[in-house]
Length: 153
Image 1 (cartoon, one colour):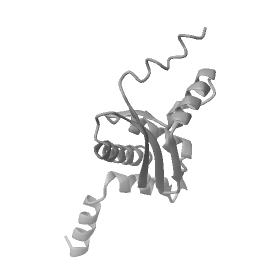
Image 2 (cartoon, rainbow, N blue to C red):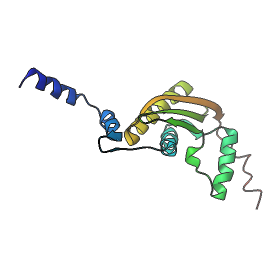
Image 3 (cartoon, rainbow, N blue to C red):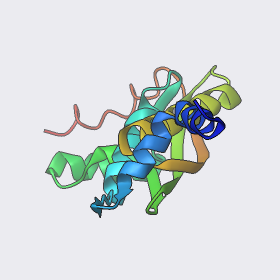
Image 4 (tube, helix red, strand yellow):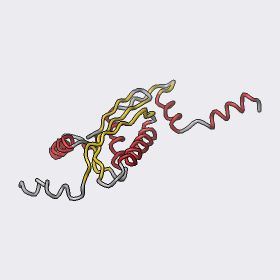
């Protein structure tokens, strides 16, 4: 085996799944385009998977999203998520509500890691940044007094 063969073999061994997925998005036989909505859904679901996240979206976005989803028009998975998607990279902005008592720095770091892992694994895109805006804390019992559904028939 020559030195060139060894170098090529070592280079191939260092190729990661993300590298393979990236190369699969743009090939000699065509390209794959991933819509912003797809990345947005992945980011929203990945955020909700993290312990300590009560909800995704700010107060107004959550109220509007709830009303719109009851009518059957909107998609709650995109609520509180904004993405910019390029041909090989994505940037994510999230608005979240964290459960009271949780460490905000720890929860947001877990969100960043999970969102990055899920988007890269599912879409093959490289996540360049995950910006998180914590807009509220959830206290157990907050929903007890605001249940308008039981009062209005």
